[in-house]
Length: 432
Ligand code: UD1
Image (tube, rainbow, N blue to C red; front, side, top):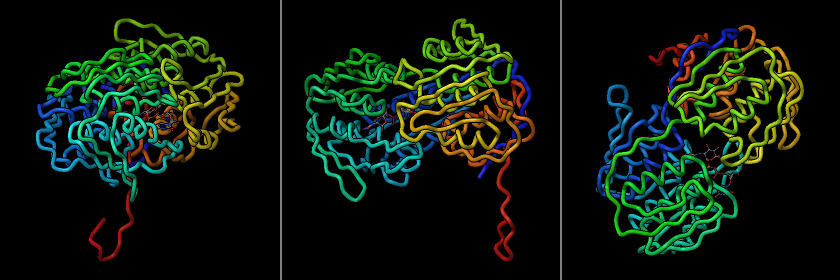
């Protein structure tokens, strides 16, 4: 298992370029299941979740070409022959977003078999709302042996009101509704930019969707969708992570190739904290300083403060003067990083869904453990201001969603290196 070794203290200076959004690329790849023709997606990030999705689609019989570097981070997916519309537990357990194939598969193939994702480090994360929505669209659902089986000769348009706002739930049913007979109206939808991006792609494929990006989405079902080319939006969570990295290190960092409009909630909060940011075109410049003020945060659905940057914000809060209360509203158990930060010297108390952070506290060398994707990023940020050497274990989590994070950080002045675990030599095994 790889580890990061980080020596803090360097302000981040220069320009960092943001990759395509993982959370937009995953549903876009699943959307390719809706047509027999090739779908070309550009600005695909080079992260492990994309590779998992490639495997998932390939296991069903899809042809997936994935090219990076000169190939422009592009994938071409052709789902002409789908041999088995199934997502196995082996793949779903490593990436919950695999459940995004459920809606497209049942819409296109008339049946699907997708593993239930099971437990998760940050909360229960059931997919009951995906299933309920598919039932409303006329699918017959059977759940056994840890799998959901859905079937329908053809889905029928319906009125769907989500009991709770769900991002991938909205995406899953949006994709299913494109090929349903008649009109579907979905209410209380998630409004994340990744949903509007998915609808853009689907409309280019011939779907008829209105209102994506708002709470009410209307879909007029069509008989068939066709191939197209689409560029994935920039990753707002990666951008936010680097903005916070610039802020926490007191650096002067230009975060380029992002969409500042997707970052409003964070930029407003940073203003309160006393960090200067300025937006120009597709860039955000962040100028950090030593006098940060505590500010409370409550995570909410978009356009509120994203749960996906709560952990990284907590790292910043440890360096602000005063008490910051961070309330996590989306997931039940998303404070695993707090205890690791405490091991580095932070003063954080967890009270149910609230974390109370008292700053400013010096952070210093410790070995810490990354528990999930965004928690890993938060520990990297904390390490960038720590005194001495921080070793972060289980960084495979970070590779799921950040493209070359250590190279990007090194290029703007961070001291970070990756080390592989050195296995003890076993006599006679031949394996070093
Ligand atoms: C997506 C993002 C993830 C982000 C999250 C919240 C992707 C691939 N992942 O995850 O990075 O942290 O949105 O912004 O885009 N829920 C139910 N029943 C359901 C579905 C969800 O109760 O059927 C609950 C969840 O347990 C959670 C809340 O609804 O408490 C929001 O979850 P949801 O928006 O579905 O998160 P994901 O789509 O899994």
